[in-house]
Image (cartoon, rainbow, N blue to C red; front, side, top):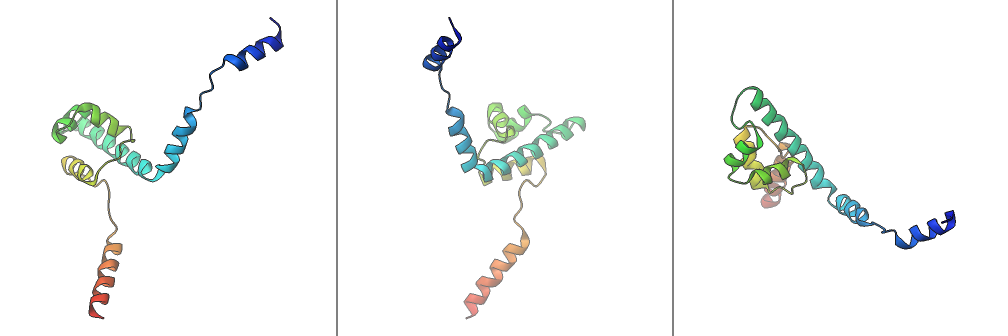
Length: 122
């Protein structure tokens, strides 16, 4: 078989995989929460690692799953940083690990409260 025939055969029979395009679009569309989820996952992993060194509970994914009342598979998925976490779950994890995972800046809260009070007084 000559070079041209091989090229033609490959062109006819090759499977064109375009699934990566859809994945890239999905990641672009969900970039904000994926970034935050990844940061939370890194923080959780860091605390579990520290707990393991200091022999504190929970010190691994299985123990964290037990404390959360969920499966180890869910915790594993969460630690990959691709789980869209609910605020309730974030707060529960933060409470179990005794760390802050997210924070709302106090300035914004104070400013919003002041704006509401000003509008009520008018």
